[in-house]
Length: 445
Image (cartoon, rainbow, N blue to C red; front, side, top):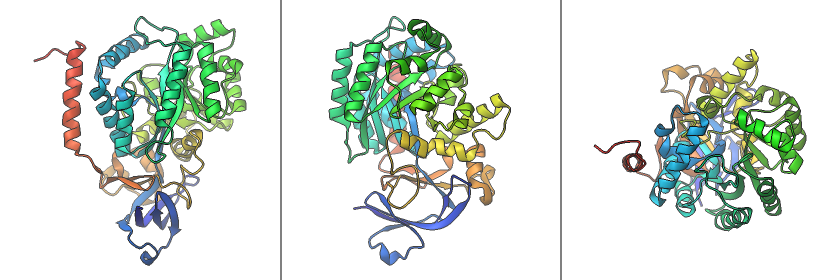
């Protein structure tokens, strides 16, 4: 049983951006007590002095492709059609070792920046190596594999509906409840138009029967959305998904860019959860979603870093800042997606979207996913009276000092626990270079 007593933490209130100085006692993975605590109440606890540190819930990344961390450079500055072809080409040349270390590197980067939960849409093949990396990293993950049965290009990996269902069952058996409950299964079809109505409906039924999340892309590309609208006789992809019956509170919709006002109302009514991925939307030139409009209707939008081949980073603070700034610019309203709203999108909104009722807030009885942020060693983050806003607008994930995942210490003094960071960096650099050479995008010296 792990026990930690965190002294003098300034716990952030995400409603009014204030802080309260309290002690936090973590026992067996849960917040046992919060307040002024006598150490004698916590026998055997490791004591951490959090003086002048901001305590926040761990961040929840609701849309991710971790294996893409190995293919960031070769996919830079490409239009989406060429980007997809090159992505699938690289995937075909990655082996078990590549997938393991790509996933591990992405998870460790996420932890370094304060993310404690990832909603993963994995690639075909090498599932065992991928799951081993998640398990070794000790991060919380909801895991499904992206499936497609309609080609978007000549190299799109395709499987039948029956194969997708068998694969989903395999994921369920291997993942759900694994690693002391840190890992959960999902179904994760890539999304229209690369997924047929039959596949979408069959996988949604599979998910409902097992109480799983249905995680898909929605309205990411303008041309693709128009193609779906013509094929289904609707205004767009969201209306098509409603028509075939896959939208509900257990459906996560990554990107959600090309939506009509009517479709935003549909999302509100069905309680589906859009996931905002602003850095990817900007880098691949997908467009800017109507997040401010969604929030104004009370839709609990979540945040995601997406794959690093498109977003470039697993830094949720950078993601939140980009999303906030974009909405302010496009609406000409500086009050939209404010710091309070943005941090809730990064924490409790995502936790609830993934089915957690005891995650995303620092309160007694909740699972102890916690970050401590040290803003005392960064000249741009001065002003202890406005730390939460300053962290979003002036900071990055590099300010995160300490991370707990279900009461297990994963980062301390800005160093990953249990891993030789220099070995990981060296190993990953070597593997990435070999992959670049193998695929022909770099010539061997």
